[in-house]
Amino acid sequence: MLSDLVRKKFFRMPDCGFTLIELLVVIAIVAIMAAILFPVLLSTRNQARQARCLANMRQLGTAFELYIRDWDDTMPATAAFGLPNWSGCEGPELWVYPEKGQIWRYVRNKSLYLCPLDRGHPTQRVQPSAIPVGLTAKDYPLSYSMNIYLSKKKVGTLRMRQVSRMLLLIQEDRTRFNDDIYVPNPGDRDIPGKMHDGGTNILYLDGHALWRDRDVLRAERDSQYWIPIGVPHI
Image (tube, rainbow, N blue to C red):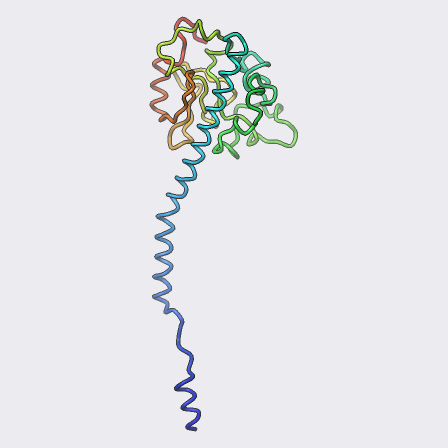
């Protein structure tokens, strides 16, 4: 009997379990930390993708510059004129084949034509019959559209209000029109995108690219900074 008492006294395992209240407190702390950290992590990831998108546009801008030098100061075309054009789009509302584009020889990388945030988002500006077998509208390989008023123009002859504000490429709203062509007329036919924190990325004719708020872009568009002086409106 004595040995049993000694054994219970000196060899009893300590109670290491959590009480229900302690467990609930731990769960609450984890939930609060997740609520705080998740938006931060999501914002950081989106900022990284936005930066990659801007890098894509700058590299495409370099390709435009090289094309213009090689082709007697002439801009590439948009898909409004069919092939050949800058992106390899076979025509309005048709599929895009970057390797058929006029600037492809200076790019040689299909991923540069697509914003990382566009992946998995279907475009509504393509005919179903034009989608290649095995692909869907989510696979549309182009995020950026070219200012139609610069298509096939001689750069040296253009008169502009401000070259640093002349639109070259823009990431349009993928839920509406996104088809290689941007028509910067007042109104909402071609809408600047808002995928990047309420705005979109834009490449200007002088080669610099940056993020702009969607409402600011609409005002800039309506002020006609994006249409060369003397060029008839489409």
